[in-house]
Image (cartoon, rainbow, N blue to C red; front, side, top):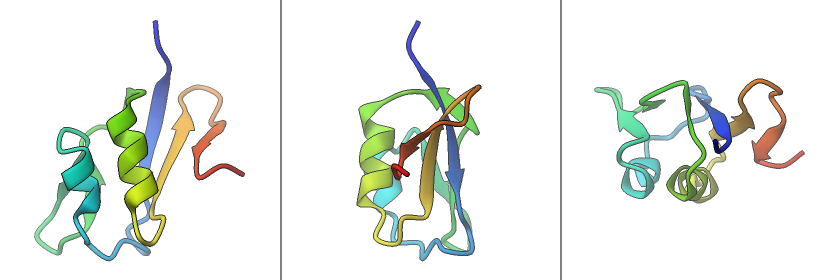
Length: 76
């Protein structure tokens, strides 16, 4: 079984660029205010989720290992 990640978006930082949705359409949605939300709070580790986090222009997306909360992105 692969890793699971906690997926978080800091809505106070999110500027609604939509790059996360473009990188991981199954992982993120924009609401009516163009704020990003993870589709699920916990998801299987996936390159698309990591790409979404890395492409966020304001680093509003955080990925952590589920269970231990060890950072995946951004690294500490």
